[in-house]
Image (cartoon, rainbow, N blue to C red; front, side, top):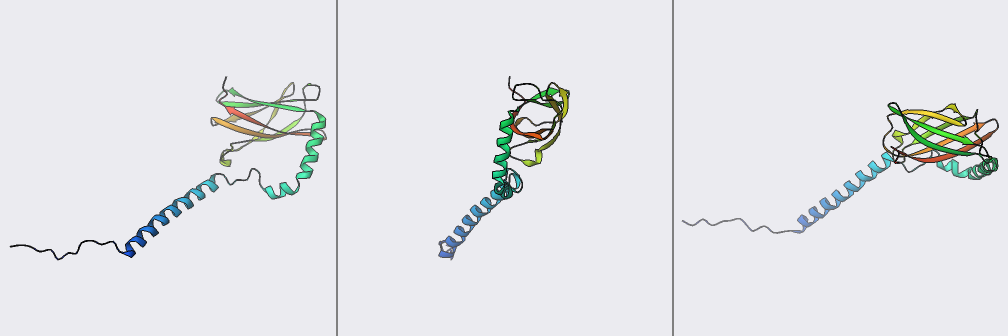
Length: 168
């Protein structure tokens, strides 16, 4: 006895091609949307909040920087291990290279790619124009310091890129 198959051979029809194309493009679009959401949630693209207002006031910022440049103040920053943490040491000098004491320094140590790791800093004067902020649990990598030193009516805004651990 011979068995005869009544099944037809599989044929690719138009709706099969359409379904495969929709699925393939749907997958590509879903992956792109997921990557875009992840990218924007970890780094929104703004270096500072309210960047539009900062742009509108840019001429004021330039005028303040000219006043600061005329003062001739300089700032240097370094990371130094201490105990279980790290000290961020800022040294302020005047136009003659003499230490600037009795200044108030406020700043923030920023992780360039993820603002969740940013840290506000509290500086204390340690003498000879040096100011220290202690930091516990600093992640290894490149950090960006943004700070402002004020003494009397004068101020200096400064930035520095710092590598931790430092390479010697």
